[in-house]
Structure formats: C-alpha cells, structure tokens
Length: 179
Image 1: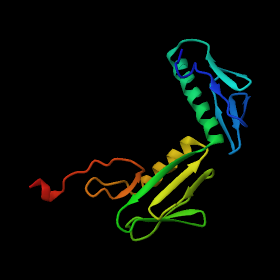
Image 2: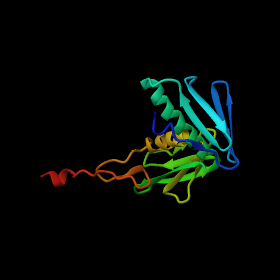
Image 3: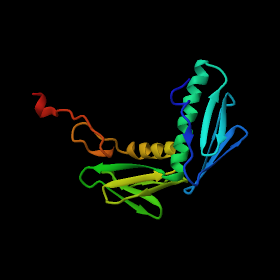
Image 4: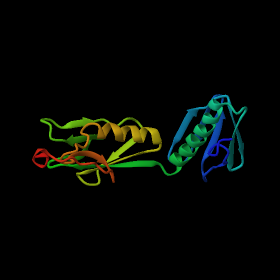
C-alpha cells in the first residue's frame, strides 16, 4: 500500500466533505473546493476521519492512491487556513502596488506591468518591494506566484528580479572577474 495513501486523513473542525459521483467537495470556513477523483479509489468517510482504499496493486492505482490522499489533505488545509507565497522585488526602482484590485509592477521597463489576479486569489503588498499571494487552492496560489515571478526572473549577475522569499540565486562572475 502507499505509505501516504494508507494514512487516515483527519477532518478539521468546521469542514464538511461530500462525495458527489466522480468528485469530492470540501467546504470550510474560507470557501469550497472540489476535485475529480478516479473511480479506482474508494473513499470511506466515518466521523472525523477519511480513509482511501484501492482495488488492486497496479502501479497506476498505487500512484493515484497517494496523489488523492495529498490532494484531499491540501484541500482541507486550504479551506481552513489557506495558502500563501511571498515574493520579493530586488533591484533599484522595482516597486509593486495595488490599484483597483490589480497589481502594478515597475520592473525597469518603459511601462508599468499590470497583473490581473484570477478569481479566488488575493494579492497584497505589505511593502513596496514584497508581494503576498494568498488563496485556498494550493495549485492556483503557486501558479500565480510563478507567473508573477516569470515577469522578471532573477538574473545571475546582479541578482535583480522577482524571487521567492528565501530563494537562493547562484551568482556568476562578471566580465572583469573573468580576466
């Protein structure tokens, strides 16, 4: 059995989980999430614990077993606490601000870059050089943070660009050091 899949999943207080045909719907204090689940994986909801089982030991079913266990844990965590990613802007003149729900970025281009967040994502700028992306869907939060980072990825010579908080950028020596 999958080591991750065989562990029972505890439901947090105030979270409801329902199986509706091929999908599972998790609702909690922060919102509602749903995902499609393979008919090969069976779910048993008993009280405050969910257990996932599979019908055979094929490689595909083993991988799906662990996958759906982690997806359910992330959905439960998302509807109770939520997820967030913090981005840092490094560079002279690089700034971020929120205007009318949209993110305006000054990244050294001749024009400001406007990023419109998708539904379910909240973007905040605690300072003018940090961006906080938060929401209940872990995949969507990570995807939006990666999309913002791709607007100006950190370069290896001076380290300027948008990076995740705590991300290490390997620096290269410039022309002067090569001689």
